[in-house]
Image 1 (cartoon, rainbow, N blue to C red):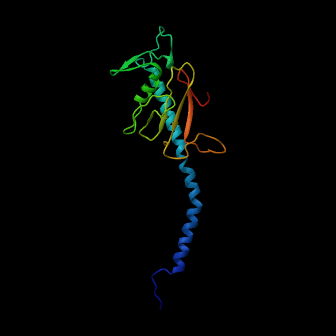
Image 2 (cartoon, rainbow, N blue to C red):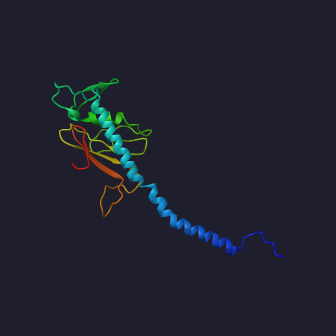
Image 3 (cartoon, one colour):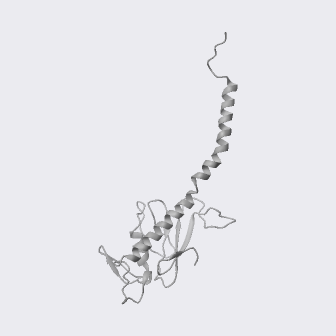
Length: 179
């Protein structure tokens, strides 16, 4: 009478083979259902931009909309004082926007044209316009920071899954993909 309670090597290998086949079949489905992290971050960042710009334009302490003002919307670069800080000129939008976003530790605000303005707490690198908003201005962001690849904007051949996105903001706060 043979009373073996263990598994043979063949039974163990067969079990591993079956588990491997099941994993190979289900892994692509699981990956598709998880979504694209870069696209998710783009959507999140666009929501932040839309909400922040709308709140800024609706706040008369930031952008007064009286009939006496010659410039309306974001083109109103006249000085405003908020919490003892004066915002004015072509850096007004950049500084006000940056003041409303939670920044990463040790990420100062740099409102210089064509330079990274700051890194937010969620790791997004922001490039805000430094302008008087006489025309549409580009707002750019890198959803995973400069340290992580692919570091490119959309191109069907070279960059089908970008992490850098560029949008344009009008003086009235409308955000579009095209200039």
